[in-house]
Image (cartoon, rainbow, N blue to C red):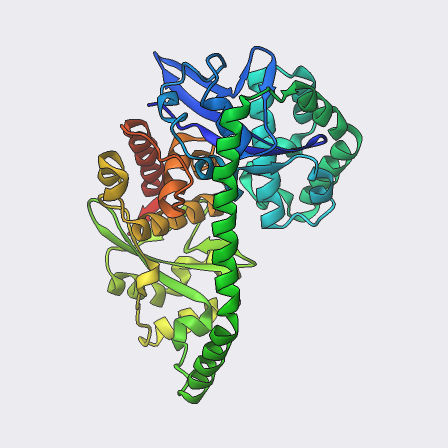
Length: 420
């Protein structure tokens, strides 16, 4: 499977520069990763116009033999503008670690460290590896917020902040020294600069049109809010008030029912020690809940409204009603992934990703977050389906590797279900 070639932006001491990155791909039984460059030089450009001018004329660089390179020189300039998911502000890392370690800060920092590790691997930057390997916290960022909670988490974040304060300049200098801005053909650059200017002008006009309609949209919104206030409020229902959701899981073989809630934005399932208690029908789940002693060790017991759930079940008044947003269909997705991008239902995929991620996070398992990171072939495909962008190079089939990785994630999840 040939992985895609991705435009990225690097925020470096010499400025924000654009280049190309080929995330890991397998060819002839070996795994590869590369950046646009030549030998020890990393080629980077001030904007997408210069990048386009280079790739349309260059005859020698490290990506020339990439299996997907044939499609790259034909890309228009807007397609070479990095999206937000592939813009890495290396210079801004000290400001990031000065923040509290919330989900967004850790996620952004994890993406930056990921691309820095890739640069260090490809370009053999031993000094960068020494910095990143010298502090444990760098290797835990991809696990999200969990490792940085509690007293031990505070210590890890403090260690990371100290490492950045003392050694991040070493990382920046090493990468900055790699960068070369090649000369490009003046005639081709004139053409690509016009393409970029036209795109930016169209974007500005479209944005101005939205702003001009802003007043009318605000009025419409205010009227809609008034109409909503006039309507009778719909009761949240027992489950809404309890803050716990019944969920339905449809696998290739069966349907299962269980419970899940979020406590401080962290998922908690009906179960313990990474095993989810799952039932084949709503009635079976309700009957088991009526015997409160069966769940003495469940992680849901730490939720303040859990006794209310058990009381209602014991009284025979508990109805297991599952909303559509809490129905997760895993069946058929692996086959759709292998068939084509168009065959995948984005809503079904998004919900499935939510379920697999929640279960893994709850169990302290980082395999899902790793497999779905943008540097992995499955993660790149999922990202493309869930966040379509006409300026992104579409993943190229066949998707056998992605299907295999998805099946592993689903199998791991199904093994996490404790059947009743």
